[in-house]
Image (cartoon, rainbow, N blue to C red; front, side):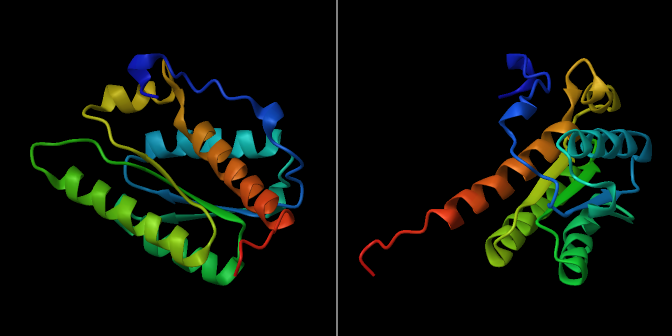
Length: 171
């Protein structure tokens, strides 16, 4: 749902089960740091509210959003988290750089998810203006870092649910 449809980060944390044993990686871009720090803070707050232990939240930083997939892959290979949340902000400028970066990052994170079998969450803001970014990192449209953490936890839960109900489908 888009922000225009009034999706203001109102998420129901009661639908999340026991997350005390989950390990979550967070990779944050240093570019647009004032925004990405707020997004990361929101993600961590949501993880802790769902009982993820502080020691099980592994955080690293990369220079920019384009480096998020490689940083996420490195974190995954070394720490084996249950999910990796990638946080960045690419504000549209005078050129189309934002389109190239956002598309590349989204595709790379999708590929990492499919190949690894764990969720790599796209927590990258793609606003036209700095004000739109500020509105989405704790402003009038909520904090999209909260939503990225919620998505990671829901996807881990889905994986565990599917794993516990294995059935044969004829092969």
